[in-house]
Amino acid sequence: MEVVESYQDAESVQSNTIHLNQTKDSYFLNSSIRFKGTGNLLFVEDGAKIKDTKLLFAGNNSVIYLGRSAWPYQLEADLHHDNVLHFGRDNSFSGQTRIILSEQKHLFVGDDNMFSYDVLFRNADPHLIYDMETKKRLNPSQSIFIGDHVWIGQEVKFLKGTKIGSGAIAAGFAVLTKKFPSNASVGGNPAKVLKRNLFWTRPAVHAFKEQETRNALFQETDDFSFKRAADTFSFAKLDAELDARKTPQDRLAFLKQLSETKTKNRFFIGK
Image (cartoon, rainbow, N blue to C red; front, side, top):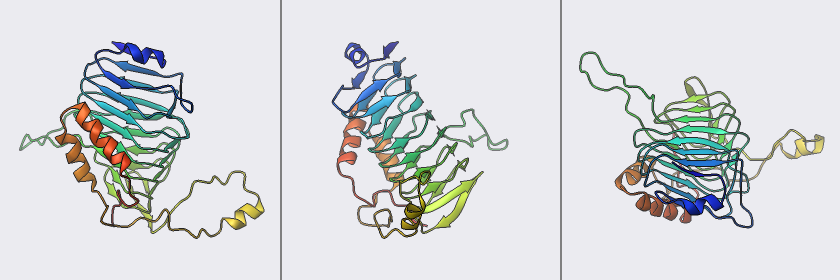
């Protein structure tokens, strides 16, 4: 097993590939990366901050891509064979997010998402379920996709096949299992759409005084309102693109290209 617990340790990795540089704005605190397999690839953009994080590559040929952000990553993630875990830029975490990826399927998270405490992602059940008559498997594993600027509440659970569009809100303790539109709030177990045609902004109201509360009654902006456009990129196509690229290096090249060609409405999901 190859273990990385500091920037210096990254230089000794031989059976896997790791890009983890100590730069002016970055840090790597109380964290570890463990490679049980070979051919895996970890790419951390320069400037990314990592703390209280445990990354485990339990199999071979998986990819983790962590975009830079002003906020530190707080993750516990287990990957197996041929998985992709992607976080874009400027995502924030109030506490540790738990991720388990299985059976060659993926988790893709866009930019500017806000994670509360104890969020969970699982893209498999993971045990096998079959129809008694046809003997056909009923529960294939499926990738999970999160757009840009999604607010994820406390203890939200994302299960296999979940897709949620840019600008949405997942209310605390929700259990998501399907596709949800942009600019909508969803909640419950199983989650359903609670309200459509809304947007949210990052400022926290905890310390607001009376004047700040009055000032926040209206917000004249369309920055966080998303719509279908020529640049909209379906999550189904994204999943197919990841599956079509068979090596970690090819998948990394695709993720880098996607990161550098960001457009506002790329991950819009309609009603």
